[in-house]
Amino acid sequence: VQLQASGGGLVQAGGSLRLSCAASGRIFSSYDMGWFRQAPGKEREFVAAISWRGGSTSYADSVKGRFTISRDNAKDTVSLRMDSLRPEDTAVYYCAADSSVIMSTRASSTAYAYWGQGTQVTVSS
Image (cartoon, rainbow, N blue to C red):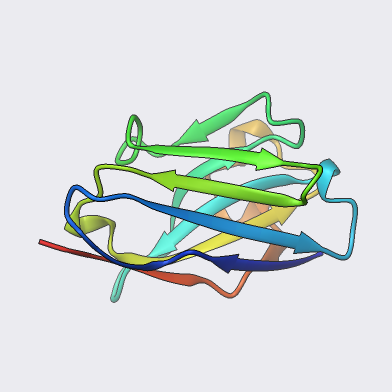
């Protein structure tokens, strides 16, 4: 499956952005999806994940209550709504997919076989 992330940009602290990830190549609706981010000089970290049906979601503690992951299987897209953005949210955001992510491992980057190219999010103070 091929993934294309978009929607990044520059926003002031307290603002909002909506990232999108468009999938193609396989049956998107059967894939669990995740968002990760990587700031300069830091390791890639988990942000959010959603099950293939959309009935189960997970969030990193640092974004819980501010970010919302959702998916539209009819449009083969997964979105990440980011509100109340903070400067520490600045990073390159990646979407990821896999056909069988065990729930206990969904926060691990190694659980996902397919990755998008990333989209830059910059939050100014």
